[in-house]
Image 1 (cartoon, one colour):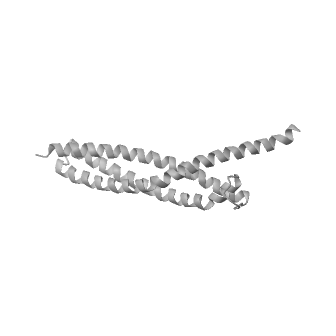
Image 2: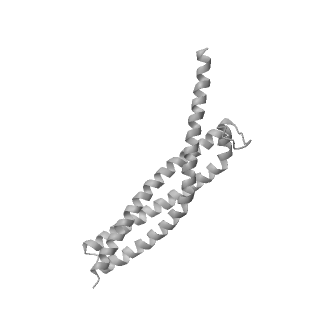
Image 3: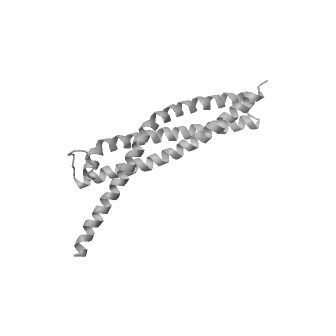
Length: 166
């Protein structure tokens, strides 16, 4: 009798684990919604800062330490902003897929989302999209932190350049 109950207990634990994972992911999903616009504005501001670094590096002189540091940082910011922009595009596609499949997943997990019950295969695809979203969101946060560090260095270099202007 124990062998007959084990799969049911295991499946119930798995469903509970899936529910917790889903609710956590939906919290991330909601944060990302607000984060998306902030990212877009931040990337635009970084492009402006990058242009300022290029101009100030020419003013400081390409042979000075500050001028060289500004050029290197400008190039680094260019690469990182492009990668983040591509990452946002990919994550937005996954985000849209998660939104489309949300009722299906919630019905599967019995979270009261209505009557949108699909096949197990459809639900698995939806859960896979959710996992991709969580992984992508984690990577995006790392890129964000890296760009914030670039921004701080950029502000420092620009302050240094301003203090050297006669």
